Image (tube, rainbow, N blue to C red):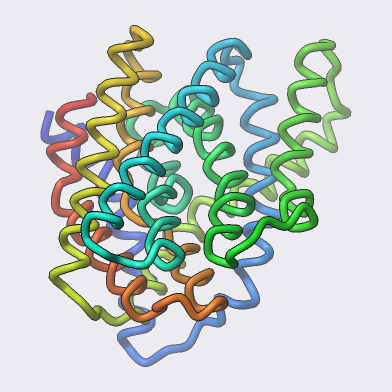
Length: 291
């Protein structure tokens, strides 16, 4: 069991640690240039190639996507109630409690814990999270909905195309598949690297509040995941993926949105750092539970 845990955790910690140490050593890395490449090129290619190549039943992928919608809705409700009870601003903190880090942390964990099947199922969950991040999440932060922003999310189109091709049994030319696969492969290492970079740059303010809201995000997310796994009778990798993705810490993108819209960015940064630290500390127990 310990060897299994180490084989999953080591790649995540080491790669993120390289990014963290790189910045702490006084070196520079302009994530502002690379992040759009990950969001609009690498991540869509990873989603598309994984869905096309996984061989996982499309019905199961759809079920995981549906469960992801329910999990995010439950997280939104819990977050709303927790913030109202604590008197905290919704625009600043609600996206953080609703939207976990299913990409930078969740996808590598799903991959190393359950292999290609885990990655495919994790992609189904992550795709919903990404769509909600750039629609509901950014709308809460901005104080209003934008159809243009929603339609600019590339994951909508790559998932639709992949589902259409799988449903019709259409295969792409090998050179296209190989190219998309190659581009998608840089996504997970860069996600982890930039996670470490982001953590090294962020500072913590409002530690007490950050700890409380981190427990809501991680503990509440895990509780929702357990309930959904039981309700839908999930087992094996499907159950593990739902539990992992549901209990991830606050996504870094929530800090970027808070900074852009001036919604208590320093406090949200602290929430990202504290929730990620708590998640790192509890990951061995989570993985021991799901493996």
